[in-house]
Image 1 (cartoon, helix red, strand yellow):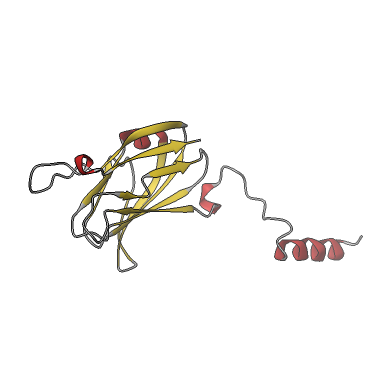
Image 2: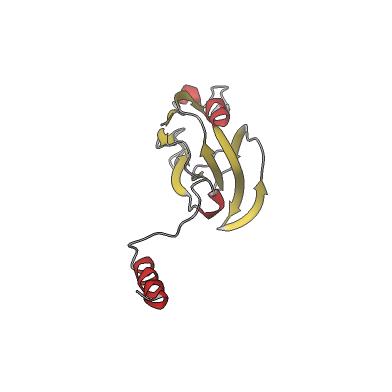
Length: 156
């Protein structure tokens, strides 16, 4: 085959999705993140994570989208998750507009009523974590975990 025919054949296979572009597996700047959405609380005022069970895989890039439709602020806190991921960035959004980008070690993320935050990370270690909670206290002094705002995270 001539070089032109091979080039056209490869281009056709790429456009048709038969072959994928060859990026190094470790080049996370080229990976599209896997989006996982978690709602902190709900519009009825219940203190819950929806869903309250999350699963991730090591080596994959995730965009964890945290939204708060409730009238209360909520925390997304998991010391175990923090210790098992490489954080690429956290973006703070308002009405789909990026307001801030935070980089470095993340301890917890506070999401205020009507707010959204995106946590971009790559899990680097596996395990089952039972330490997801919201540490906010209500007016009566009860914490949101006492109301049931807890969850589990599995990293495979």
